[in-house]
Structures are given as structure tokens and as C-alpha cells.
Image 1 (cartoon, each protein chain N blue to C red):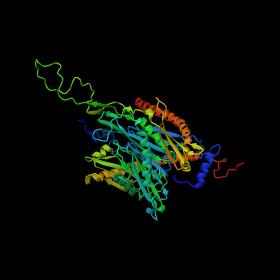
Image 2: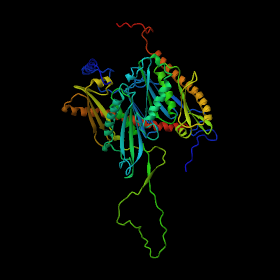
Image 3: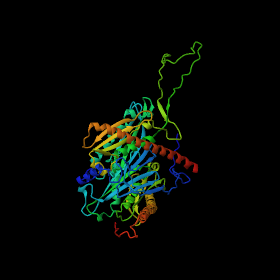
Image 4: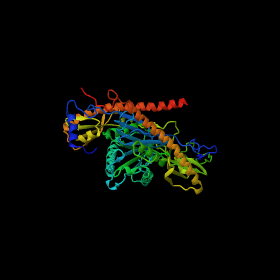
Length: 334
Length: 260
């Protein structure tokens, strides 16, 4: 909803500024709508997730729905686009069903905006997972994260990053084994004068380098899809603060987003081993903000992001459990 | 040297364990999604397609409206993770446009567009997983989505793929089979037996064509039964939900409630 009438805007703003603050669906300023999350929705992908925020319960519709899927491809470091250690490429596509009143050119622009934000945030070197390389300096994984927005009922950024995080959590990197080709050793003619410690020409005894001679790799044949992508606890969560000074609130619906002049998008990572990190920050909208207030918003945002992170974490672990347990019980029934 | 996968082995079983004329497992989900007027998600085995319908409403492209009937607009998007190998297709990809225009011409004679002049009906097809039978799944899902949106149709359109493997006809092909044998897709209107779409991109001997075409039309009837079951179940749930909603006191829903 890009445009909103003056009276509608004034209606929403007045209720937000009143005491107690009122929102159209009766939520508090810092309440999220119900979040539905499911992992493993695309079995052909290495990791996938679907998140829906604000769906009406009991088979209702609506809400912001986003699907994210990760696919791993092998890239050649020397001759192709590969980077030693692997690389991440993110891509967002907006379904025309979600933005049905938007003409297709603007839809491409919107997709590009979302893609840039997602890609710049997640492909940052500090978040780079360590198990994306296959053969050092020869072959590496390219991680393609494809996000599709199926419907938008407000707060698309938060939901998008939630889905991306869930898909990355769910990703399993196939185990590889490096393969080395050994040439046939030349037949030795027995010679009384032969030195027993004869070393093949070209290799000096003083050469202590540990050179990898692996030239290719093969996929190890295991029962599972691989090991989880490293750095699960480093992926950030996004929290959007909709600011209408002096109040700010979370999880806006479409009319609320159109009525609020300023949106502060914060990405926080909560790695288990160190203190919280602010990964990224973006200010959107035609409003203005006092510099002194930004610090307050950052600390408040961190508080809510941590709540979101913990909730997401426990749900993801629960999903892991459901899928492994479900698989096991299915097999035991047979 | 790997073993070649047999399309149809001597005992009459296919590569995925099905019989010659056996269709894959079908699930139909008609639950409401987003703000769409109608939506349906169908799975044929491992092929999963989601279709959402908006309309009849003000057409997106005003210049293309017709004075006496509604305009159908079909947009297809294929998810990059839908196949084994990731492949990102842009919106203007020729294959996608072709799929969209085939779906549009399938439904033009079926949707009663003359009831809605100067408006548009938007059909958005999302392909989430592909394992053969793409056109078939898209058409079936579109039918259900249109029904779910309450748009009047002359009849349900049911589509099936069929192929011929060295003179043995087979139905509902997977990707493996589609890559190997000549195949076609047929969309029928079961009540009248009329066919609204036949497409074939491979070469097939004329003598074989008659058999597989007839077979596919009969298979359409099977899918029609499944569709009717799904639509009826959905409608039943909606009716039950309305029945259990709280009524005004006295049981007369139309009476005004006096507030003291």
C-alpha cells in the first residue's frame, strides 16, 4: 500500500500517540503478530524454510509469507567465478501476487532493493561460514540463497531475514573427500650400487611445505545430507523500528507502514561466544531523526532483537527435532 | 558403468514403482492465501504448483480491457530451487511466456468472461517443485483456484500428461520419463468431453497418437473426480464454520441487537 489518505494517516498517528497507544488490531506497540515457521519445505534444496507472520489462525489467509531456499553449487576457483573458501549470493524475488497493483518495472526495482539489502548483509566476511571450501584454491561451494515473497502484509524486511536465517540454519553441506591421482611407479632395476634412501628427482629433503596434491573430490556416501552449515549462531536477525516521534513500534501492517514517516532497520547477531554485534543498519523514509535518539533506538532494538532471536532459535531447534524424530518414527512403523 | 533405468520393465512396473496407467499421488489444498480471491496448491507426486487468482477486478493494463468481456492475465514464475539444478529464470523467459500463454488459451473458452466486461482476472502461477507434468499441474491448479475464487466456469478443466514407450502408452510422467519418451499433455472438460488443450513437443508416430490421446481423455475423468471431492470438502468446511459461528440471541441472525 504505497498511498494512504490524509485522514487515514492522521487516524493511525493519533491513536499511536494516545495513552495508552492503540493499534488497529489491538496489539501493543511492541507485540509481534503470530509467526509460523516451517523448515525443509523444498526437499530438492540443501536447506529451506517458509515463514508466515500475521496469518489468521484456523486455515485463514493473509499475513506476510516468505519462502527461502539454499542451493549449493560447485565452482572452479581457478577458471570460474569461484572464490577460495566459497562465496554466498543472495537473491530476492517478489511474486506479482504479493504486489498485484505494482507495475512490473517497479516490481523489478523493489526486488533489486530487497536483494541488495539481503546480499550486503549476509555476504559480509564476518558471517562467512568456514565449511564452504572443497579443495583449497581449486574448488569451492557457491551458496545461492533464493528468497521469494509470496504475500506482503507489512514488515517484509523482518520476515525476509527470518526466513533467510531459518533456511541457512537448515542447510546441510554435502561431505566431500579429496581425491588424489597416483601415477604408476616406474619399474626399478635392481642395482648393487643403488642408494636405499633414493628420493625421486625434484623433491628436496629440506622441503617441509605441506602441499595439497588433491586434484579432484568425490561426494562421500553417507546416510544424511551432510554436515550443517558452519556459523549457525552468527546469522543475524532483523528488527524494524517504525518511528513516529516520540513513539516507535514494531511489526507494522501495511497501513501503519504507509502512515509512519521513518523506519529504522537493524540487524543484530548474537553469537554464542561473544557479545552482540550490530551487523547492519538502514534508515528508510522521508522523516528525520535526532542523532542523540539513535543510540537509544539501538539499545532498545537490541533488546527486542534478542527476544526475537531466542524465540527463533528455540523454534528452529524444535523443527530439527521434529524432522529427525518424525523420520525415525516413520521408519520404525514400517 | 551405471545401470540404465528402465522406463517400463518386463513385469509392467515403471521406474518409480507405478503401473503403466497409474497416476501419481495427488493432493489439493484450497486454503486461503494472502489477499488472493482464490488460491490452490496441487501436488502430482513431487511436482508442486501454487496458483493464486485475483478478480474479477480493475485490469492492471487499462489499455488492454475489452468492452464486452473480462481479460485473462496469466503470469508464471518458476522458483529457482524447483529443480535439482538451480536455474534462475527471468520473468520474460520465452519458456515461461509460452507456458503462460498456453494456460491463458486453455481457459479463455472456459471462463465466462462475458459476465464481467471491462475487467481483468489475474492468474499467478508459482512453480515450487518440478518433477514432470508441469503443464498438467499448472492447469489443474488454475482450475481449482478459479473455482475457489468463485469465478463462473463452463466446466472444470482437467489435464493429464501421457506418453508412449515403444508402443506401450503411459500416464502422468515424471521428469525421467519425459526426457526419454515422446509425450503430450491433454486438457479436457469432463462433462462434455471437449478438449481445450493438446500440446506435444516431441515426435510421435501417428498410429500411436490416437491411443494415447483417448487414454489421456479418460484419465481426465479420474482427475475430475478428485477435484470435485476436494472442492466439496472445502465448501463443507466453510459451511460448517458458518454454522458454528455465534448467532444473535434468540437464534435469529437478521434481527437487530438492542444495546442497553
